[in-house]
Image (tube, rainbow, N blue to C red):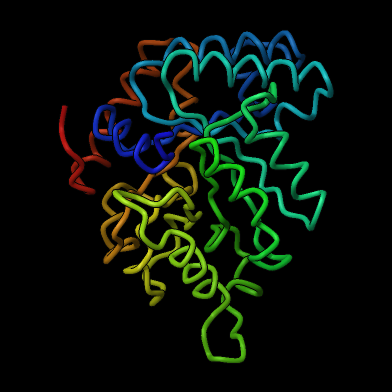
Length: 280
């Protein structure tokens, strides 16, 4: 079975590096003239699928904005994942799951088992119960050609209290996570399937990314303040694939699909130029 890393390289070579966050905030639904209801949510997602399919390598639905509607919202999430995947778009489901033992296994089965209605190409996971607790999710993902993206350096201001703390050997916690991911991808060719989340707003961190050989989700582009030209500084030395992620900066151009597509193409090309991805 083709690995997630290999599939990601093929998709980004074809469509560029940009990852679009599908974050249906209540305010965004209102801006689009849609009701803050499951019906409004479904209409929003139908428009986004129509606008993005065939133009973007990967999308990142934020599960929380669907979960807030209960089972009706989850049904829309299932449909949205299915629609994107049926049209050849990789889906990275942003759920930030992390737990121990049988619970971690159940989370893996929920999102990374092809038999699940929520089956996605990859998910975000939290390592802060110990990196070893991610094993069931990593193992099931790799068994089915999927991936996981491990939180390492996030863009929220509270993160430093944990992620920049030092452990007994002098490394920062974030570096420990990066090193664990590098070890998990050892021998992967052409790219590992265990990625990291490393915010584009981080600036020059002094962290060593050179051994990663991993995809890197780079949230923070646009509304959170990061610009395409910042990417070369933040991810200097990386032997992997950077996936700059934007949501509000793009989705504010909807519901007009042409305006949304134009904004997508412009940002994607700017990121492609900075990161030296292959052109179409």
